[in-house]
Amino acid sequence: MAYRRPFYKLVKPVARPKITGGKLVGYEKRITHNPATQAFRLAANCLWQSKGPLGQQYRKLAATKGKAKAIKAVARKIAVIFYNMILKQQAYDSSKVQQDIELQKARKISRLQKEAQKLGLTLQNAA
Image (cartoon, rainbow, N blue to C red):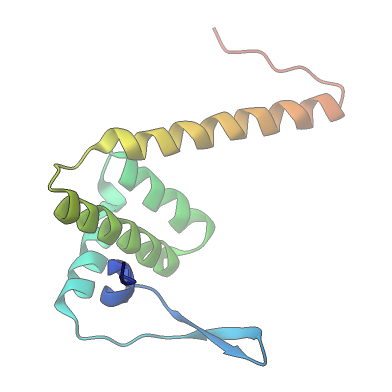
C-alpha cells in the first residue's frame, strides 16, 4: 500500500517547523495562495460566535494561545473533518467533537479534585 500524504498537509493550514541539527529552532510562516487553505482559515475565523463544539474549542484556544494559533488549529481540524467526510462518504457528525469536549471536562474535574485534596479541601457538586 502506497503512503498517502495527509490532506491537511497538502492544504498547509499550519506553520512549518524549522529544524537544524536535529533541534527545533522556530517555525516558518507559510504564505499560500491555495483557495482551500484560505477557505478553511476563513471558516475557522467565523467560529468565534458559534455556539457549537468547534466554536467552544476556538474560543478556548484563542483565550489561551492567541487568535492566530487558534485559527490555524481549528482550520486544521476542519480540514481533517472535511477530508474524512469526502473519503468515507459520510455526513458530519458533531457527536465525535462533543466527546472530545466531555473528555476535557472530565480531566479538568479530576485535576481540580486532586489539587483540592493536596490542599486538604473537598469538592462538592452544586445543587
